[in-house]
Length: 246
Image (cartoon, rainbow, N blue to C red; front, side, top):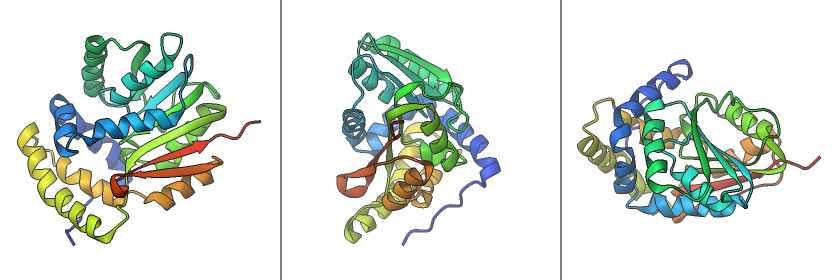
C-alpha cells in the first residue's frame, strides 16, 4: 500500500487548499482531462442528468472552480433558469468567467466568490444544489452539507459528485498505484506546480468518507431519501439527497 501524504489540519486547510488551487488555475482544466483520461467530462454530464434540473430552475453549484458543471447546468435549465456558481478561489473563477464568455451556454450563469460552509443566500432559494470534486476540500463537510440543505427548497435535490472507494480489490490496488505514483508526476509536469497539490489530492481522496459513510452524513443532515450511484467501478460516486417536502 502506498503511503498517504499528511493533510492540513482543519484550521489550516482552507488557506492551504486555496493557495494550491491558485497556483494551478492556469492548467486546471487541462490537468483534469489528462489525469482522468478524459472521463471527468462524462462523470459531470451524468451528475447533471441525475440532478433532475429542469427548464426554469434556479440552481447553485458549489466549489464550481472553472465552471464546468455550471455551464452544463445552464444548458439544462435554459434561458428561463438561473445557475449560480460559488467558489472561494478568485483566480479559478476568473478562468471560469472566460470559459462562460467563450462557450456562451444557452442559459444564465453567474460565478461568485463564496464559501460552501457559509452560503450567502437565503433559506429555500434553489431547486437543485450541486458540488463536483469539491466537498472533500472544505474544512467542515457536515457544515457544507447543512448549508446545502438550508438553501434548498422543500423537495429540492442535492447532488454530490466525488472521488470514492473502488468496489473491487484489484481496482483499488491499481487506483492507488496511479493516484500516489503516476498522478503526482503528471500533475507536476504539466502545471509546473511546486505547492504539493498533486500529493495532497490523492491523500484527500483517501481520507474522504466512502460511499456508505457519505450517505450517512447526508442522512444525518436531514436529507431523505439518500442514494448513490457508482461510476467507473466506484472510482467516483454520485450521491443524491432530497430535502423532504413540508
